[in-house]
Length: 105
Image (cartoon, rainbow, N blue to C red; front, top):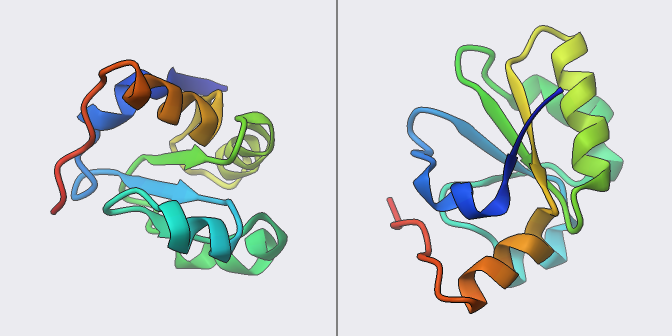
């Protein structure tokens, strides 16, 4: 399975890739990342049809565990998919240590 670490998240161009946030709607609305698409984990079976297959999909959850499962499912369905290791928690730790937020598009 493909993966990347959370510190690389700020370099993603959400016009060229799909950033899939599988946290709950409440978490996403409270602290979503600009340009991300929210399909909560519990809605994955029906929500995957919303994702374009012509762009890589980077999957983000709270800790990186569920996103790894979803990235594998996406790969099995023909997507180029990446798990974001450590999830949103690792991303916030990166930002807190002085990392840059992605530019809003």
